[in-house]
Amino acid sequence: MTTFFKFEADFVDSLRCIPMIVRLKLDTCGVKLKLAEWNRFNQLECEQLVELPCDRDSEIIAYKEYVIQLIFQHTGHEASLLPIDPQPPWSNDREIPESVMTKATEEGVKIDRSQWANLTTIQRFALIKLTRSQHENNNFLPAIKEFGLLT
Image (cartoon, rainbow, N blue to C red):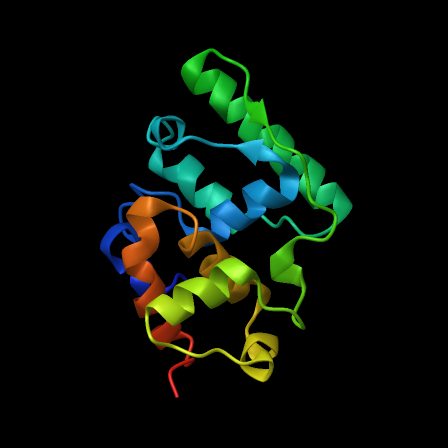
């Protein structure tokens, strides 16, 4: 069973938005999935994208092929592919990305390296993503609270 973040609670029941767990898997396999494409998938397909593993090389390949197939099936066009970062910033538990530090400072929060190191990969991923997207910046502070980073 996949756990969603509390800050995603307003949309995870219906899966009307792409949850962080799927966004991490998409970055892992190198497929760009637009919200308009996601919204064409049926509930079962969205749930499968949440639940399917995407860690080992064979799983990453299978996940990528499945997403590409779904996009084509529902839109009639080829999926947009993204370069895969072999060492994404969320996999580095020793260095806090500048975007996270800047956003934390704006919110009046100090994150130290030991706190960053104690986060899970998906938590680090979420914080990084929440510093990038204009419409999601309002979830940064709720995520900080949820992850226990307020001292």
